[in-house]
Image (cartoon, rainbow, N blue to C red):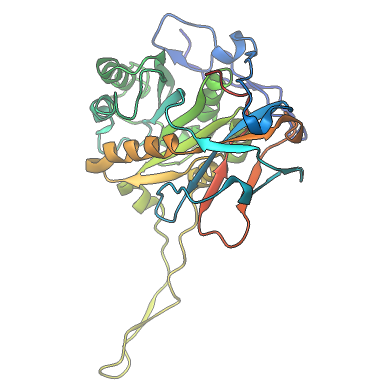
Length: 360
């Protein structure tokens, strides 16, 4: 059983289409050895019955996340006020819009174990198990990976089940070569985060349902073949939205930027001044990837991590599904869609790539 992250790609940097072939890209705890992206033929999905607004044209569906400034879903954006523009400048007029609701999810859980400094990632089993039946529904399918010195898969396309999720986390976190034979995280400095996300995207590239990756990670990449922008483009083209959950302890340390401060007290009673003023925090690359691919990134203290996961799943269920004309979205030529609202909008909006309508 190989543990290599070897990735081969037919993607030219000048090409508008990203294609990743990932043979033998991760260790698998199950009996399967064939890579899902290499082995599975392209899925042929029959279009759902067209809506009244789209009876005469072939259509696609696009998942759109709209939140306010504190990450709450909103419901006061009518479809006629939305404006969509692809990366090549094509304007798209949505035909209809509805809540995602209980649409089946093909959900990948990717646990970055390269910086498990507090040794508490093993508690994720109980945290996921507690969401079965409320946020994880019987029609969903779960695939789970953990990664450090090697990447391992402990669940594949499984029905959400509390016992199975606990076992999936336990098996992944105890895999013999996860940490290169050591007991705890060992490969953080060389950890190829974006390559491993690409493996997860490839596994979803032919999956039914709404395709989502939940990435539990600090967002630190230590090496690998791909950068975050390449992986973001690939995920968008495969209709895979990526949501990140960062440990607040790590994010506070990683995002701290030291500034040379000079304190001036002045005369008694005057206010203390600091120079230069503290700089605004730069966006983490994980935040940029998610925000440009139909998702977002939250941070959570360990005692509230289950709530953070539940919050992300709640946002996913409350996305909007846009129906768009198929001829306005040429497949293989679009690496992004900018979504805006006419007038002044206080909302955050991000979409992922369009796919064939889901079979109901």
